[in-house]
Amino acid sequence: MPVKFIVTNGTRDGCKKAINSLKNLDAKLLFADRAYDTNEILSYIAKRNIKAVISPKRDKLEQRDYNHKLYRFRYIIENTFLAFKRWRGIVTRYAKTLDVFIASIYVRCIFMYSSFF
Image 1 (cartoon, rainbow, N blue to C red):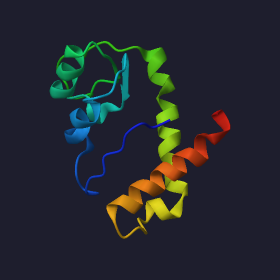
Image 2 (cartoon, one colour):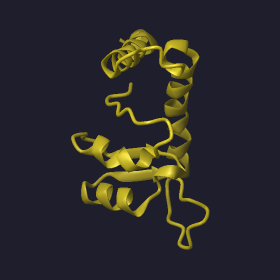
Image 3 (cartoon, helix red, strand yellow):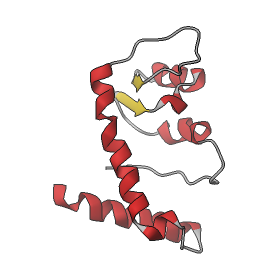
Image 4 (tube, rainbow, N blue to C red):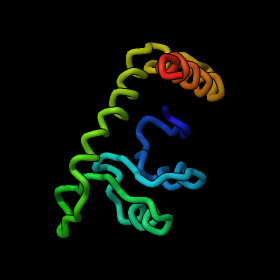
């Protein structure tokens, strides 16, 4: 279940806000896609003893190792975003204010994950 949301402009790069979203989280692994394979993020999580499960960008000269088997579990994250996209109110951002938009995301999370409780 998602634990934190940071809303940015639709055209803004999400990895620039990644460190802010990681500040108060206690985690052992960070699952992310190639967009989050930046030196800044990797050094930040290394300082916090978090292992990166991030596929390296193909254009990097030095390819680092990552756990291929764990990376396959990233589909859970992708499925969460697909579920958000199926809910028209979130995709088209019907909410007039940011608070209402974030509340609708939390309501959707509760609806999606209520079968697990």
